[in-house]
Image 1 (spheres, helix red, strand yellow):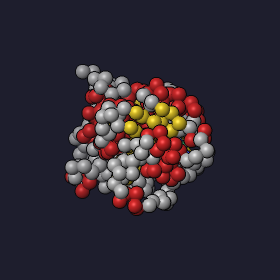
Image 2 (cartoon, rainbow, N blue to C red):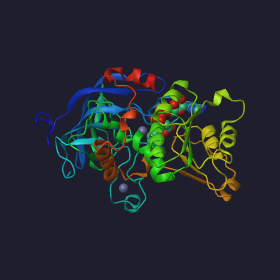
Image 3 (tube, helix red, strand yellow):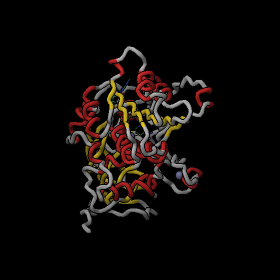
Amino acid sequence: MKQAKFSMETVGKVITCRAAIAWTINAPLCIEEVGVDPPKAGEVRIKVISSGICGSENHILDGTFPVPLPAILGHKGAGVVESIGEGVSSVKPGDKVLTLPIPQCRKCDSCLHAKGNCCLKEDAISPVGLMLDGTTRFTCRGRKVHNLFRTSTLTEYTVMHEISVAKIDDAAPLEKVCVLACGFPTGYGAAVNTAQVTPGSTCVVFGLGGVRSAVVLGCRAAGAARIIGIDINEGKLARAKALGVTDCLNPQNFTKPIQQVVVEMTGLGADFTFEAIGTIEMTVAALESCNLSYGVCVILGVSPVKSHLPLDPLKLVSGQTLKGCLLGEYKSRDQIPLLVDDYMKKKIDAESLITHNLPFVKINEGFELL
Ligand SMILES: NC(=O)c1ccc[n+]([C@@H]2O[C@H](COP(=O)([O-])OP(=O)(O)OC[C@H]3O[C@@H](n4cnc5c(N)ncnc54)[C@H](O)[C@@H]3O)[C@@H](O)[C@H]2O)c1
Ligand SMILES: [Zn+2]
Ligand SMILES: [Zn+2]
């Protein structure tokens, strides 16, 4: 097995490199020179090789999901460990790693529970943008810069807690596997872990972005017979067919609510529905599209902060299930490296989530494409 090369020259020193800074919302990111501090105890400094961008970053930049700014965004990354702080034992310099937006400390109530994966050390639900000691490792133009979800991957180097870093196969292609750090597990796990899609079932996926592609792959892997995809972007509908979506619907082409269309198409509503957009309107539509008696609706999308779901409790009394999931219910450090192994064995097609490859300096073009 080949070891990635690394040098000792930077160890213990501040690294000056380029990063994309979000100074304010509703503005492009700025590529700037930043200082990245050495890792403290329990921390790891990583040379980032690739990063994906996610619907969550879009919500941050349009202001619907506020995080402290200025910040270095990006949370699904792949890279190589440059140096480690005191006490770090699960990775060493030269190791290939993924950056995890949800850590796994293996000690908290959630980590110790058989099913829990929302580690209490997370910073993704109500982000403060700082390390666990309340400080940051990034400086730009003399100002301290926040991290995102304690990952920050839109930078050449980042510093993360060991509990947020997953060591992966030495042979994994780093320019591709970044999608396995968030988008893929979120969608795939929603289908196979959270909904537990059954063979022959009918599934409906709201929102055909990156997360959705993985939901579709998960539904297919679980043996779904029919997969209905819903999006307002016609371009996404075309791609969805190639992935295995059997029926594509654009809500703008109908005068009646899309949930009514789905119920009519399926007879009595779908077995499983997934919301991967992040709006209340589509969450309600996803719930109302599933079978009143045994339908399961899974929320993945991040709706605007402090929004509320109008919910008729009788719908749940009739037997429907409404649930949500974070990172596809995977225990991040334990299970995401196993997804990388499955990808290496060609058991999962994570590459179908990659639509474009851009150099770092074209990051704003990336957001336009998203
Ligand atoms: N639960 C988790 O762990 C988790 C993890 C990652 C992302 N997310 C969330 O999942 C959601 C999807 O993320 P993504 O990366 O796929 O985003 P994306 O931007 O790639 O995709 C969103 C899709 O929704 C479509 N859309 C927007 N408004 C619509 C409407 N009114 N009707 C129909 N379609 C509409 C867009 O055209 C786009 O194709 C986001 O809300 C994101 O924050 C959740
Ligand atoms: Zn994400
Ligand atoms: Zn934990």
